[in-house]
Image (cartoon, rainbow, N blue to C red):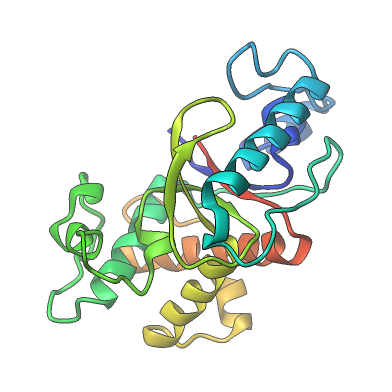
Length: 236
């Protein structure tokens, strides 16, 4: 199963008025126009206006539930034609980056050379996510599915627009934590990081190389999310 990352309005996301990297390549190869592929239950995607209303109501519910835990209002462009950006780190790339960060904050443990099949149950990752442990990279290591373009240090679980329990984080904090991870490990320049993201890793690539590619993809998208004040979310 592919893993893409989407940055844009949630109205546009659920209406399906956007393309993954793979969908765009396929459409261009076949010389076809964009075809909407709605994401979510039929009751949610009956119309763009209905989706928009559901997202705005969801955001208002978040504001009420978070109360004074947030310092700035939850507000972003939530229109069907808002700009959008996508990237495809893939599950192998994303998992490699998550483990790279987990092992970076537990330097006494040696990071595996290749991504384990059950990487999400890695004992070092579980230690970083244990109750009471203050992870330096929580907005990457915790199972966040949506990052909002607002600065808050905590992550939380809430019902998504489509009614599913979803962990929510901050794109602003994710961007900062990715930068801190780079500073603590690779110390790569922006030009070097951009080079990492130009070519997806081939099968059998080592964990660190996969992590570098995913790092480049997520860093670019987190920058777009904060720069354009748009949500960022996983798509799988």
